[in-house]
Image (cartoon, rainbow, N blue to C red):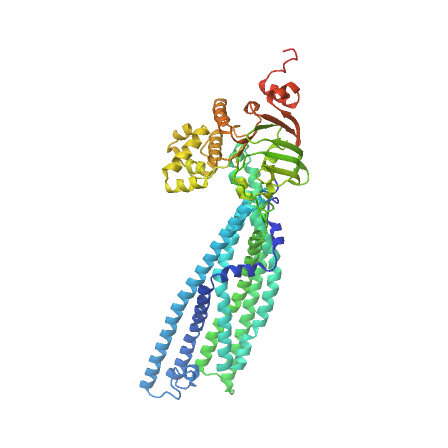
Amino acid sequence: MSDEHGGFEGVRENLDGNPMWQLLGYATAYWPRLSVGILASFLTRFARLVPPIIVGTAIDRVITGSGEPGLLATVGLLPQGTIEGEAARLALLQRLVVIAALAYLVRSVTRFVSRYLLQSTAQKVQRDLRDDSYDHIQRLSMGFFANHQTGGMMSILNSDINRLEAFLNTEFRQLIRVVATVGGIGAVLYVVYSEKLALIALAPVPFIGVASWYFLSWIEPRYKSIRETVARLNTRLENNLSGAAVIKAFDRYEFEHDRVADQSQTYHDEKIGALRIRRGFFAALRLVTGVVFVVALYVAGRDIIAGAPGALSAGTVAVFFLYLRRLYSPMRRVGKSANKYQLAKSSAERVFGLLAQEPTVTSPDDPFVPESVDGAVRFEDVTFAYDEEPVVRDVDLDVSAGDTVGLAGPTGAGKSTLLKLVPRFHDPDEGTVSVDGTDVREYDLQALRDHVAVVEQQPYLFSGTVAENVAYGDREVLDGEGTGDESARQRVREAASAAEAHEFIEDLPEGYDTQIGERGIKLSGGQRQRVAIARALLNDPEIIIFDEATSDVDTETEERIQESLDRLVEDRTAFVIAHRLSTIRDADSIVVMDEGRVVERGTHDELLADRGDYADLWYAQADEGPVSADD
């Protein structure tokens, strides 16, 4: 019951290169809207540079009348020369107001365009990533699901992908902001106003760049650990919520509280450690930019007082410090962006590591797609292990098309595992499994599974109606059920009747349209099994596997299901796993397994006559001793 099992630490090993480039690849699929959004974002930032220039020009040329023509006059937006007279100053002020209004208009329009296009692109990337990741997970082999827990998968599909969307949504725009703002302001300060003060103002840029690089190396391992801790915490919570009935039955509230608390404490400690580094880094950036601000203020003020050549005018000083304030805000934001980048990279490693995970069971390059299947199944020297210890050992079994084979034996004998090899939920480590004389590994995977149906001991039902769950067994019926097709509904009823489920379904509050809840929790165990049998029969398979499919029904219902199944499997190859041996006594042959091996095989009467393991099990269940040889 370790919380470590089932994590996703290993998926990072699948990566080749930086996963953030792969994320960018998803974004560039929308390059037209992305290009317009980036251009609009740059225009927004450049439009923000205009109001400080308006303020400085107004101070120098309108209020004091003593300033130089300035940048706006240089580019032809204002007249050159000294502005004299009240009317001329008023006209200049009116022109400045118009320029400012146009700048704000451009800023508003481009801000809307850039934010809409960039944020909607981030949403599209999020959708594509989640769709691709979910579809990829669904297509991974069953071994993957055996080794990874649901909570970890949900963590990737939700929190990790959401984090990548947030990064694209926010930090991509921040990158544009830094480039446009720092580049634009630095150029204006250096070229137009004061080289000396511009160099002072830009002095922290290299320091911030180097510090951000080291910050990423410090914080990266901590964020990786945090993501794995979140996955384990989600897994623990998912397990406990799903197992609420067991926790209540055994009064394990305190035990589970302690396990969740331990995971929460680990998450807390790791977040606090990362927070300490982050806040220290950001505080250092603010200190550096604050020092530069003070130095620039002193140098500019000293030059003005001393009347030094090239000293700034009052309006130019106002422009300089307005720019300086705007310059350091995005520069300090670089630290936060570096932090967000590392968080996003940690999530990207898990998402793209998962996408790089290859299924172990796949169709061959040139798959065999049969027009029809008779249903003959053969196991030849089959051995299979989930880990190191084999659970199926050297099994040889030949089943003719149309035969019904019962499998008996103690729990853990390998019966269910053996039959999972038929639809290729797993592949054998040694030996071959063939259908109609062709190795199942040569089949197209889905074509093979279209001819094999499995009804498990604990069948999984989806949240939805009874009809939807039965219709799940056939694509056309499922689509027809969604559109209200009456012929599809009729086929659902026929399958339910064959599984002895129609009667209890009709008694439900809304009949076939009754919502059955998550995992079919509103139905009894026997009712869930009958719905699952109906679902399997609707698929009309040539091979059908019943894995303790009647274990949760009463004796009377079992007899009714058995009568129906006898008719339904008459032209099909059927494998029936049963602890209740009465279920398989009429099978064409019965296979007894123990410790992964076939230890007996024969008909019911033959096995009783042999007085081996099957006979012991039969008489134990019948609560009577074996008959004597004279009887």
